[in-house]
Length: 210
Image 1 (cartoon, rainbow, N blue to C red):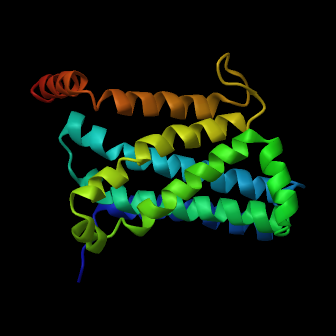
Image 2 (image 1 turned 180 degrees about the horizontal axis):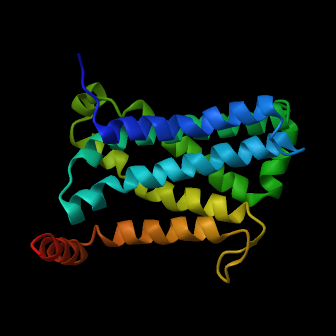
């Protein structure tokens, strides 16, 4: 019988928690009057959160020498794609009834939707090729392809922040969460710089030796 680690269980429980809560709130009548917008925002927010968590695996391994998050990175990424897909379906189907002319008109009126669409389209090949069989087939190109996530992540945060009412640069309005996500992403990217990675590893080593 396969044993599941506490982190593995936590990842799956957290990933499904948003969907379970949305279903519960739907039947309990807890959604806002504009429930479609509510569902759009929840799925989009959870997709962004899961993507950020997937990017946290490498820095956690670097700083704390804990390798298990690397094994959970793929699941987190696939869950992020799942919620991004739900986000797009709700927008295109429930919100606009698959009226493609109206959808295209809205996209060109709201540039943040273009950013979100690009992020979603780039995320699809990463999800499809995330499995071991593709890793073997693509060889070195697999790693190059999956480095696209470092372009996708800032685009997702930009889409998230831009969709909110406010100014992310002055932290005015409903932009605190995307601003925090953006800061976290910057820290993750900084830890990919060799000097910063060595510094973080040294600090971690000193703390663990106390």
